[in-house]
Length: 345
Image (cartoon, rainbow, N blue to C red; front, side, top):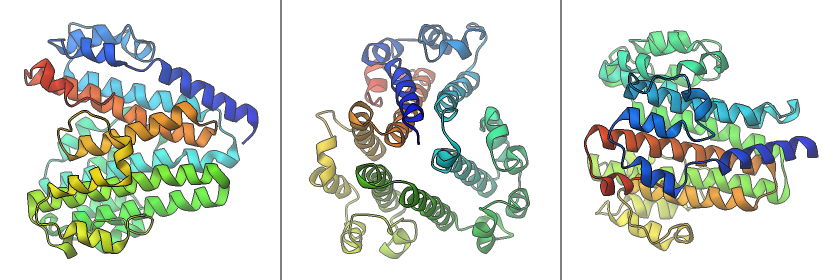
């Protein structure tokens, strides 16, 4: 990557991040009483005003606002990607691959629960022209076979064929999720290994390995707490190839009798340095807080465009989830203090 391209990506990423929602913004947003109030407030923010300026405050509903927030986040990513050179394109398209996998998994969940209409209504319509397959055909799938047909010619097709089940109730979702995640991370670490070296390579690997390890811990916690899954069932859902946590330690965590003891592992692990004094609300909050603090550190101190870009994606996603939590909190008339406990900033 040329120095001009690298500087352009870093400068743009930090400029957009500089206009992020800050503590004072969140304290104002949690006081709002309606979706219209949120829209009016976001129109004053540099990152959101362009897409929201033509929205009628009085008629906007929750689904429209969430769609516009997704679009804003996605467009901010496109503003960075336009600077990349062809030889770096593969790394910067990893975000697109992750979004595609998320859509495939959402479609499979809808097929299992027979709720495909929900996927059609909620998938990001602005994403259509950027995907490697026809999103509409995918999300209208009512059977596993229809889903496979919509993915012919993609990298996902061969991965999903072995899991074919005529009866949706027999679809092995955890194993499919593990397979697609493994496919994604195989691609991630291959691209990093082929294109980067030294400190940049180590920093990028650290970002993605951290995501893998935290996701594994969340899965262990949830499978133990809500499904009382045994160790063998849990291990089938995990990505262990790139983890710095040894297989022996993974087994020990999975064998813990009390799911809440998984949190104790986090507190005593190397991740403790990325936690602060705030109380966590649930395991996902705990993990997101760790990712947030790691990404924020790289955003401030890294001078490598791929590292800044990867951190930018994490911070963007956390801001999106903050806004979704505020919208949901208002919908269910939660107290300001309860909503604020769910926010990461």
